[in-house]
Length: 453
Image 1 (cartoon, rainbow, N blue to C red):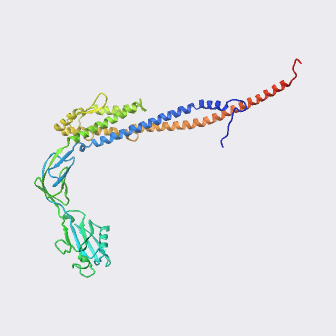
Image 2 (image 1 turned 90 degrees about the horizontal axis):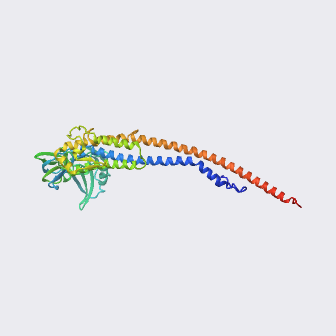
Image 3 (image 1 turned 60 degrees about the vertical axis):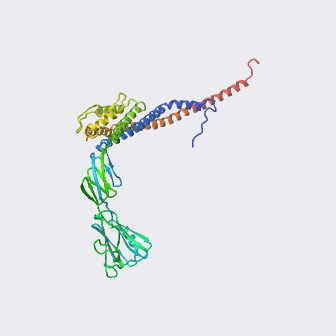
């Protein structure tokens, strides 16, 4: 239980005020430690902000360090109702004549009609094949059309067929569809061990038989076919309507039978945007460095190290494999007197047209391109025990020491306050006693006969 202090009552001394002022003087070392803690916390926060910007810079350089960021092409189909195309970084500019001769289809068949989905079809084993893969289902005498549908869809061995029931005016039909298009995914359904003793008649479970070119009790909705496309006169066949292995870097998707052309051109606007992203990432990092230099990390050597490393990469021209350029400025990228990276879009456009490969490799040549070299710098700054990590660890250790100092000083202050309070309490008691004694003596003296009487 906390004690109640009321020093000075007997003596008239303002003991509490005196003790508070003396304790405040003794607290000054703690205040200095707390101020240092606040400063270190602010520096840690500043390093967190710097680290975030370096991380963003690292990600941007990693993206721009890939040739695919600059080898950007766009494809234009003369008739997108016939085919569309997606163009990747491996493509080359050019024109292609495309003739879609057939579309890929999937097998889709219907059995029935049956009275309704609750009709029991028969018993035996139902064997379903999709191309060269197959699976089987055991059907009991009481299993309904709906049970067979569910068993097909939920079978763990299902090799690629989906079953549905369509309730038409003339009854329920079991519809089977291969999940994938193309002749390699053609359907076949056979029955073995039919409960009526005949595995091939149109009765019992064998009524669900479908063998292309053989026994067939199904209605054909669509037949499995391959897509056939001629590209510049050469025939390409695919089980899918998307053909991605005919021309490097180009994926064709057939939409309908017909002819059209594809024009592939380099997307210079997208490349220019990538170069601008390069400059924006650099300028963002430099802006953060300047912000911290004018803030919590003033005179911090880490900022100078980052600036020097950036300058060394940008100013030290070197041979780059696959590029006739040694410096960014040759490709229209420069750093002005304020340290801001600028893009000369006219020069960039001209270099893309006159020496495209040199331009791309200037940024992205493996181990040599500017984006790769700058990414490597960022990797080192963010690595464990790297430039930033080591500084953060040092600040964290300093903060721990300051927290220990604060606890030690607080404990000492408690003892000092107890000692001061004890001393002034004793003084208060002594003064009170002396005051009482003085009062007593005055009373006694006042009671004595007057000397002249």
